[in-house]
Amino acid sequence: MSIRGKVAVILNGRDLVINKGSEDGIIEGMRFIVIQHDVPIIDPDSGSELGVLTREKIRVRVYEVQPKFSVAKTYETYSAPDPSGDRMGRGGIPRMVTRERRILTESSNPKTVTIDVTGSTVNIGDPVVQITE
Image 1 (cartoon, rainbow, N blue to C red):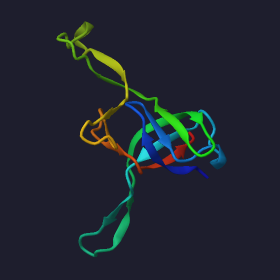
Image 2 (tube, rainbow, N blue to C red; image 1 turned 180 degrees about the vertical axis):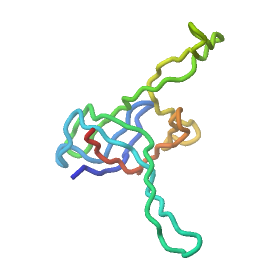
Image 3 (spheres, rainbow, N blue to C red; image 1 turned 180 degrees about the horizontal axis):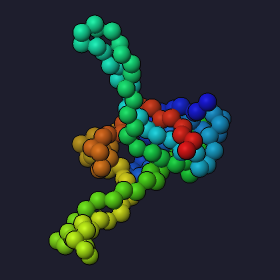
């Protein structure tokens, strides 16, 4: 069974704190996904619930474990078009740059951050779920 918790604190553009620690079975190196709160899908015809939609916001890896909390960092990378003026590489293939996926703090609300790739936000209180892949 996977460990479930919540985002307790957003430290900076790459690090956040999960409200679970060694007392809950967390060890260094464990990976988690931060997910949107589950959204119930309602059939507009019958009004019955069709199921629950869960979306991944970002993945983090634990690098510091305390008894009651853990600190985790984003670890994924993605490829994006080269922002320089030269957009094409050899053979007419678009030039790509590999970047780390980051959490960018919005200055208007220190409890909310924006992920630059998807535009999703990570908030204090968002659920986190351990992944084992």
